Length: 193
Ligand code: C5P
Image (cartoon, rainbow, N blue to C red):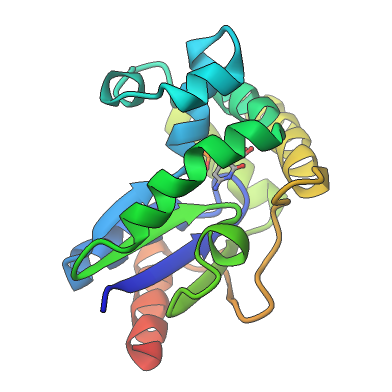
C-alpha cells in the first residue's frame, strides 16, 4: 500500500522545503501542487482549458516562482472547474509506490483525506515575508502585503479553502531553523507510519 504524506499551509511557511526533505528521507516522490496552479495562471487564456491541457512544458517555465505568478495562481485556484481538472492527477500521484509527499493548501482536506500523515505548516506573517523577500531578493513590505492578500483569498474561497484538516498536526516554524523543522516533521511521520 502506498504511503501518503499531506502537507498544507500558507505561502513561504517552509512546507515546500519540509516536503522535499521528507521525500528524500523516505525515498518518496514529491509533488509541489502550487506549481500546477502557478502554471495554469501563467498560461493565460481560459484557465479551465489551461488546467485541462496542462503539460510537462507548462510546469518547467522559469517564470513560475515570481510573486505575480503566485497571485495569478491564487486567482485561478478559486475556480471550481480548474481545481476539478487537477484533482485526478494529484490523487494518482499520491498513490505512487512506495509513497508520496504532496504539498499545497487542500491536500489533507480534499485531495488526500486518507493520507497517513498530515502536517499543517505555519509561521508568522512577518517571518514568512522575510524568508520570501530574501529568496526573491525583493522588498519585504511589498512581499508582506502580497502574502497577506494571497492567504486571505486562499482561506476565504468557497471551494477547497486553505485550512488545517481536523486530524493534521500543526507545525509552527516561526522560531525554528529549517533543520529543526525538518527533524520534527520526520519524527512525526515515523510515529504515524
Ligand atoms: O504553494 P504556492 O505558493 O506555490 O501556491 C500558489 C497558489 O496556488 C496558492 O496561493 C493557492 O491559491 C494555490 N494552491 C491551491 N491549492 C493547492 C496548492 C496551491 O489553491 N493545493
